[in-house]
Length: 376
Image (cartoon, rainbow, N blue to C red; front, side):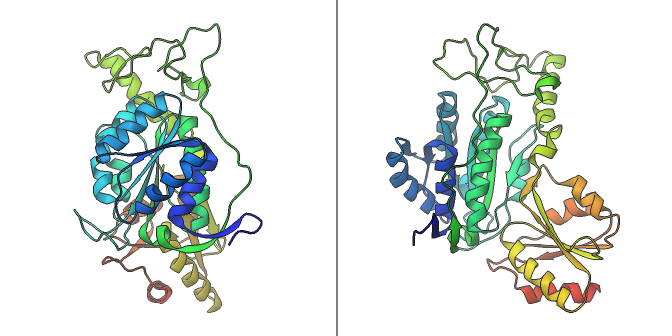
């Protein structure tokens, strides 16, 4: 179906179209359920856009191929699921410390280990935030529909280029395989990395607060001398792991460029929260039954609101803290044993109820509505 840029496609295909619209011209990945369609479609679409598709030997090679391609000047992406995401963590840390923009799509499935290859889950949310070692801040986006899969993939590339960091799109098997109406825009706003200024000495890893802690980024081949190293370094890329002050300065700046700009990153949707006594806090596929449950509760005259977090990390602390001024109970449905519920409780300091569900099935609206009734 193709009329006025409206198509019926699933979330994985929508991610591909969003990436291409955002300027992605290299995909490096290894097929894994339930993300395999992304690689399959990229293999067809990228050559049409004069891009490059690489099927790598494994996920370790995939993430490192992105880093090389990005420093070569390309916008690059990979797609995987839980086990492959685990293998990528060291490379993601290298991308963080080397300030390499790239996008990683994790289409979640049940775990641990090989887990449930064809079933959905939301069990990777802490891995997306804390998966690699050391102190750092992560940007993690969570689509709840095929349309958002397209829109947030575009946003992931823009945020990656703006903040010179890897950005994770945390989808799941339900979103990835749900076919629904998607509007594909003809033109989108694109952010490109800021290149060094002519006539100014180029210091590739140095920026202050006046530049939002974000340095300029030269690509390989532009004539600049650049050292790209995984060790802590100074503004020129030279190793300073043995110098405490300079080591600390780099880590502090890497964190500050995310934390100090959180208002540019945070993206949440609120409904019926103005007078709400109870609020459902949701993300990803669980946002859908949660929204229906909220609407059913409102029909019963109950003051229930709904929050959907499109940006999972940095966590929207300010917005949830503001709600806690009048909301007495927060309910958090998740397809895991209860993870983001801990973040909600930490921020709101109000009664926070976990509604976990594992095994590969999504919550029904009635299951969430039952919890609302018990609370009220």
